[in-house]
Image 1 (tube, rainbow, N blue to C red):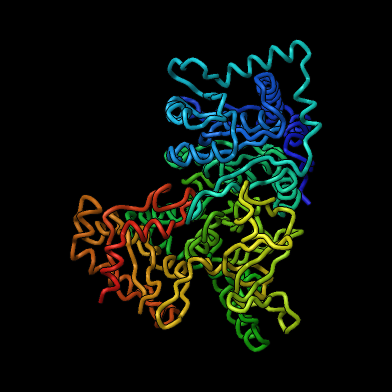
Image 2 (cartoon, one colour; image 1 turned 90 degrees about the vertical axis):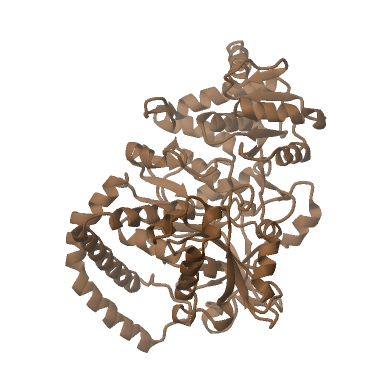
Length: 637
């Protein structure tokens, strides 16, 4: 077990980290000029105590719910620390939330206090204030203009707390001592792909179990890069794990991540599939623009590394197995993989030194030990590509309701095509969608491995329930078992493989059930397709709404300046149609009823907060409603 702080609650975690790691840097924020300004573990805790004392002095009660509307920055983690040290729970949300979402969340969670990031968010909250009768105290983190009367500042509350502590006030320490494992540390409102946001109640015990059971080693003094939304459960658990292990988290953004990778040279980072898909396309574009010799060397390096990786995975028992290979198949594959390893081992090492190591250094990955990708499915070709070129991409799986991690790949157990083995202390059942029968585990041969069904889980990370919503809670939680709504299987490698969402399953008129995600993943592997959504519920055949790639189609010879022009371009439609036929058919493993019979190009991309959740999952009901006419056209014929 890697060395880490095991605290009964997160307030104790901040306290213990200050004692254990002291002057080591805990968090670092970009400053003008491109450098990073670090804050030590000890410094963070002291500032947190000042903030907590100031909040208590301002009337914050233990176990209250405090709104926190801000994006990735040091002040966010400082507010989180101060709120938890005061014995309260935070209710976080990003600044890109709509006013309707902010109003709903602050009202529903009964917030009397709210922190806002800047003047722009402050103005929005003040407009909503007349409709939020419980809201009393608004605190702005980083004001640039003169603040209105009645609004407090983060620095002001800290100064107040500092003065109180100088006079001997130790109420914050009393609050820390009184925090119980079953107390809430947060309520996270899910964006959701359907319906009203749900307030997921997570306890200190939930998060403590995530830290305790993480099967991955991090080390004091290592550097992590933070790019995912800080209020999202996955980024939060990653940052709490970093605190427990003495790792310094550097805050970055999509705009500056390329530069910050080179500056920070991180050892680890939490990430989402979209980052790796984008980097994959950029790397291929860079290679395509290089000389023929460099292109050939890159292709040879990738091919030899991939062959070596596949061979090693097989002999470690880590090559994906969903059917249970028999003895003859194992012998055949052993001979094949041994031959590939013998042929490619030396060339892969030489080409890695000549080509791939320089590529890793160019993008800031020379010290990189790996990333854990979460929040969505990683496309198989992207997954294999980065692992083959020496950039370890692990993949995890979970939901906000499970704090979030349920399963994760590790450096020692990396089965590409899966999300890894289950977290320690976590149980899983695979349930038949039609009969409700438990397929895994079972008493039959193989214990039900390789059988697909709905994933139900039980463990210490499962939420308390949805805040003030017993009906929705009862709909997903029964006898401690949480229904994830995801479809998957346990492989013969004893790893979990995700196959889709039960709520996303498309049922055609002929009764065939279709999982749209694998088809969408295949289509978006094309450089001509930026995003897509498969349609076809209650129809004879499948269709697709497609966001074309402006850059990809330009390289293919289509001259258009914007997406509306592309959507109306006949040549663009012809090229996309050819890509659909190339990517989705019997020759690529898709059944006849999984093929796309018609499509329409969309005049605008999918945006987070609109067509996408904040973790870039498709809000299918929104897309369907927005493009109702186009969906009707696709299926009319």
